[in-house]
Image 1 (cartoon, rainbow over the protein chains, first blue to last red):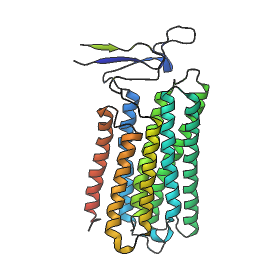
Image 2 (tube, rainbow over the protein chains, first blue to last red; image 1 turned 90 degrees about the horizontal axis):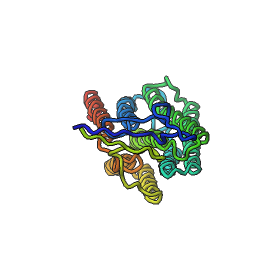
Image 3 (cartoon, one colour; image 1 turned 135 degrees about the vertical axis):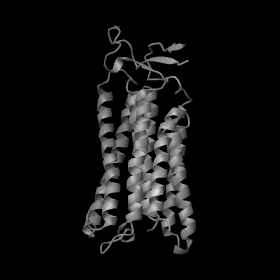
Image 4 (cartoon, each protein chain N blue to C red; image 1 turned 90 degrees about the vertical axis):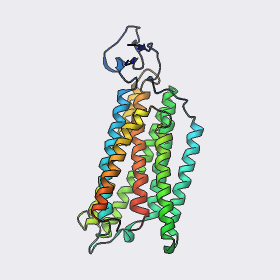
Length: 216
Length: 111
């Protein structure tokens, strides 16, 4: 027999004590699984993202030795710089998980603090990537220089776009929480953005090892 | 058919099947320190001698898998969350690994 959980998202009553079922953020959610459909959809989305990045990573692996007359990976990569970037992104995962914890504790002040810290660390990572791309370009590695450069810029560029979108989501979330009058109201949204952010970090863990550290 | 109706609580969203003892901030900081140390080890392999290539390859792949799993289980809460969430993700992950390993073998990447 199916068990149906009727869930009221955060609050059933508005500030005047009137019921508000079925409208906007305050509507009741009925799920046949008893789980949050939003969270389930986010996990499904992240599963499909594995296919996207899997394709980009395997394409890079196939072409990384095909640098033609242009510079190869061992000539352009700056491992100490990329290691610092990796560390920054890793620490942003820590600040994100602290934001999720604060949101669950309905501590909006600390939630915003940690979300802002995560966005700043994410921006620092993207800044490092822009700097890296600029250096590579000046060293003669353009997008169309070789199969290696095309696959490298496509892979790391796609990842950079994901981080940038994550930063935008984080800043938007801070704005939403500031405007929200009910503490902890957006805890699930914080958790969803957190899942996306950690996934971006997980993808970088794979890219850092397979692209940068394992020699061609 | 049984039905469970949760009362309208002024709480953060909570769903059946998602209940778990939430880890503390301290636990997450400990995990982050371990991840940072693993990243340090990975970076160190860059300066290992060329003759250690096989060992560094094993260490790097091992560290990558360990970091991947730790972030998934702890930071993304799969250790405590519903198995259905894990299933949604692992379907995509296994499909991606399978498809792209076949592609790499087809193009004789490993030979």
